[in-house]
Length: 445
Ligand code: FES
Ligand SMILES: [Fe+2]
Image (cartoon, rainbow, N blue to C red; front, side):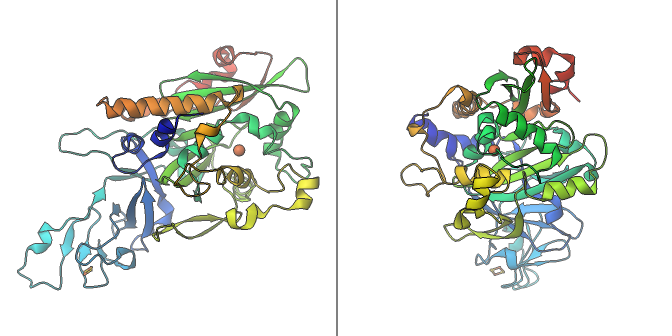
């Protein structure tokens, strides 16, 4: 459990909040690069509680700016994206990727008023198939953070698959679930795996064999590695599943082999999260069957339709909409629950969201969106989540006291590979990580 004060601290991400300020010290994924076409339709975003508009100009450069025209606040989403700028359709003012007003056609030509007009805009970079945004302090002379050198972002474009969708909960409910390995034995278990993809079978079978894994966490400068040790069908062997958390919000969740994958949980606001999933092969392009399998919805991403989501205050964002969602009870099927899997819900993320989006909220928050952690009763297997909370709360409090985090300036620390899944006689994580077979867990790749 957390105190009510710490629960507030870890979940509130708007401008000026402790956690919001910590997130704003890092480059964060904003939108997938392929979602923005040159001179194409802008994409409406909300990130850390701020409403934004992303567009790709005629030169292919992406800008992320505030979404309303400075003149009479018309929505620039309906603007004309042409000739290196976004032109408001109301009276024709035009803005560039840096938010500068570059044309004011309803003023006399000699007017210089446009030079005084500047929309809020944030620095962006395009890298690893992703548009990254930096929303932190940016006064002259300040050193901007470095991009995290995650392996999935460093490989060639054809070696990775990216997706983005809405999770209707606070970011922390989502990211904690990544490192809550004991739930794999229940929420994600299957009685009948006849139609289950081979690459996931080993994970599910191992998790089902032992529902009470021994969990260890080894903290690192970037976050932690956690290992879950289970008994296996071979009494001489343990089965280890490992995952890495990288501050503030990245996961690497080991598969037995390539492709490897994980998620990035970027807060939309306190009650909604943009979940980015990546899957990548470290050595060759992903093939068609791997991509078909990734997009089939059995794990991550869920089955998706690209669309619009109206946030409760009326602002509309453009994002992937899960086919299985709160309104349709995640397509739960009683027959499937009786015969095929534990939940009656098809995909792993669909199963995750069925629990994470429907926890009782703290008073005054939207239902399901911001869990009341004062009511929890945690057990030993919750250690990774507890560690994550502690690290984030500590870092946010230090920043409040003026101590800037150094991790955002150490992008190379993110350049690690997942140790995947291991079968081993070893029964401590430290020993396992010292073992050469798992050395890539901590080695720079
Ligand atoms: S409101 Fe955009 S130009 Fe007038
Ligand atoms: Fe899960």
